[in-house]
Structures are given as C-alpha cells and as structure tokens.
Image 1 (cartoon, one colour):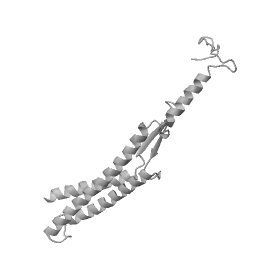
Image 2 (cartoon, rainbow, N blue to C red):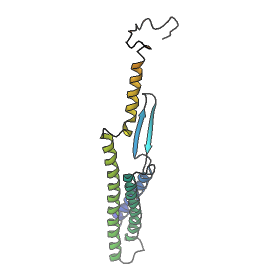
Image 3 (cartoon, rainbow, N blue to C red):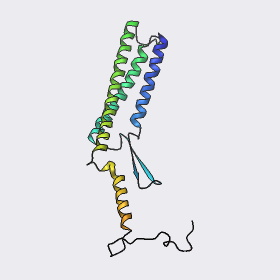
Image 4 (cartoon, one colour):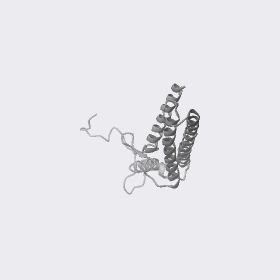
Length: 174
C-alpha cells in the first residue's frame, strides 16, 4: 500500500512540476513570418506577453491550477501512511482524499485554461478577417506582385518578352 502511495505522490509532484513549466513557458503560440525559404522568423508568445482578456483568464486559471497543485502535494504528503504527521489513520485517509480532490480541481483548472487558449488560437487562425496570423502570407503576396511588376518596363505598360540566352553577357559564370 505504501508503494502505491509513494508512486502516487511522485506522479502528483511530477504533474505539478510539468504544470509550473507549462505556465512559465513561452511556447503557447508559435507563428512564423517567412519572407522566403531561407529566412524564416519564428515568433513565440506565452501567457505573460499579452494582456488580452482571454489570456488573462487563461493566466488566472493556470495560476489557480499551480496553487491547487502545490496544496495538493502538501496534503498528499501529510496523508500518506508512511509519514508521522497527520494524526490517526482515519484522519490521514481524509487528508489523502482531500489531496485527491485538490489534484482533480488543479487538473480541471489547467485543462480549462489550455482549452480556452487553444480554442481562441484556432478560431483566430481560421477566421479570414483576422489579419495578424496571416501577415506572412500577405507579405509573400506583396512580394509576388512586386516581382511580377519588374517584368514591365518603365512607361510602356506592356510586357516585353526576354530571351534567356541573351540576357547574360560573356562574363556570366555558372
């Protein structure tokens, strides 16, 4: 029985550590602003870089999850049968049950915060009127328009065909 309690405590503390790492991470939203294949810029955004309303709600839920996870770990430590703190076996059973409930609430808070954030990001990505996510595509479109403009010569307005063999002189190297 104590092996199961020790493994449950290890998994609970490990989950708490993962929750803290996820809350502090800067990789909640990753976007790219690629102007070409060679030069791509990755933009990372975490919970602490923006003050939008839904991000504040996610931040609050994740902080509540971290707090509940901390207290759940403490309660689980006191509720184990192998510790001397916590009183009788009946009291320790109640403390261990309380720890389980607190861990479940912590998991629900973190799951709700992550789901809210993911829903908002997905909605913004598939919204055709939301321009911020599609800035790289707009830049690439402008680049292709400008590259097609270079085929026109100044003032004439029509396209002059070019012969690929005649556009290089004798000093062009391969």
